Length: 272
Image (cartoon, rainbow, N blue to C red):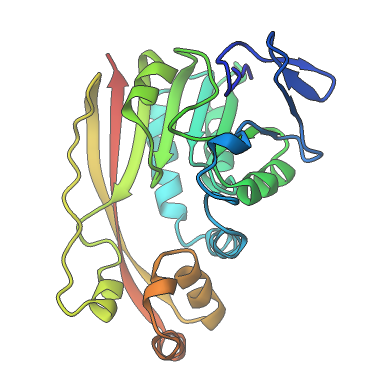
């Protein structure tokens, strides 16, 4: 994978275990294999992104397969619409669950190798991802200022991750594809009814991105039923609900079990 310097935007070259540019900015690879391309002067906090508690909870929850239907559907669409993609980007990849499964799905449908790059602002998440999935490339970086050359990616995936439209336009090549996943109107509505006196559905996503043409959009809906208190704890801790619920409410949910709507809006956009 080719990176550009997050400080001066010139090309980075790998020498042994360090990436450096012509202006002598240097970024060392961690022992897990990832590179941190988020300079301290560009951080908004000491430890940006999801903290270790949220990362661990999401990792354990996803590993139980509760969101596998979403992953499977995204992979089906990727192999249908972008079967020949060689350079793939997962924006806000977290601990690498969706990245790894997409890479495996794409690799099984083709003869030419593909390269998958995961990017996330959370160092804890990237550290785990790089250690668990050594066949993939990972970097700590901001989705608002991505350390990649223009027009590098044939396919990008963005699941629940914030990003900057200008950067999507810049990093995805002409005719390249972007797959996005965002909350549908009824996503987690059962949780909203517990927290808010007048819960409201999420806004309907608008399948419009400047510089892109929407090729496909759909909603994937199914019910999440949790009875294991540990799984319920992980579900709550990987979401903002952990901060909005009282300990009494958390205990009650863990004791009674949780049935909650999952409503995902999936869109496929092609770069003009």
